Image (cartoon, rainbow, N blue to C red; front, side, top):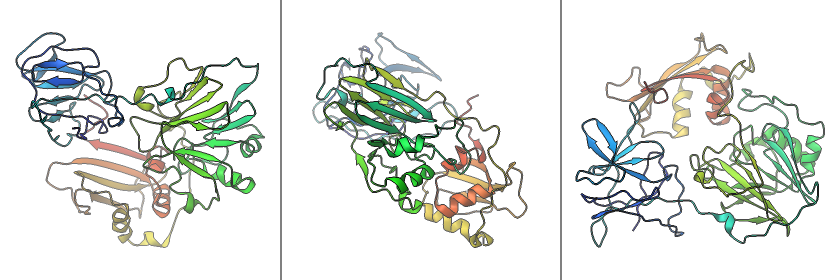
Length: 440
């Protein structure tokens, strides 16, 4: 029996019951905790293949002594009460099935315990993602000079030629991204749009506008609306805003993760999920005549860190983020009749439907320099019950103050856009209490 439980990153599935009092620590991938000790157990069946970034190198047993927790290593003890994630160092109290998170972090929900039907044991199952690229293996064949070429065009846009086929990745060739917060640093080649329209297929990794560029696709759709475009089957659809964008693309293919897609007898590709943001980010494996190319794109932990060995070429992002200096624009004007009435605030947040969280935010509309704006709105939103109080509630709660450039905020509201345009596009300033990003 397996039960889906939240881990420190919220995605893994584990099976839990009652822990024994004695034990020795097994291999780095030890995952089964029985009543007589800790045994090496590894489950690879298809029924346990969920991704989660806490499934790293194993589980460490610890002995809690006051406020300190010490790893036991291979020693035996009679007071085992805590297991620790070896990646994040978050601790799970197995007596209460609650996480003991790093200082000032949010506490997660209490876990449910599932007892074994046979011996009442506790079992923590480390779930490793499968190795789908091993299906239908192909021997590497000798290649002619120039048979495979890879060309950087700009940003994340790459052109791959393999044999007589041409693939394009994440084409952002024109226009801004993130509500004009980002612009291309490198001008693409003058014939980049011609090359895009002549591609045999396009892969788009995720919905962020520096990868899914509607200005680029608008140009493409006028030339070749039926060009094959492939995306992963993420819970947050890549082409969420296609209809609203007005871009006419007629051959979008949403494919399952970890399944080879054959282009011809020599070329195939496979889309994989990110282990940290599985709802949105994807990465790609391309294989030509047995030679493998890996493009991790923006994935924080591609395929949860389980990747093929001996790839011939790997492409990766080179920064954990972009700089907000200098700011990209000034004096954009987004105005509409609805903003004359404060009732738009309640309407908008009720439409968004984000609630049931012990979080209160104060939103402040500012000018482009994040200074208070005369005539701009300042308001509180309590997401516990989706109310709009005049003052912060007296109960304990997480609090965030957000200063938004008024024009970009109203653009996001009018178009039902993501708040990614605000914080990734450097269009707001945030402060948090508790500050979960800067541990003292």
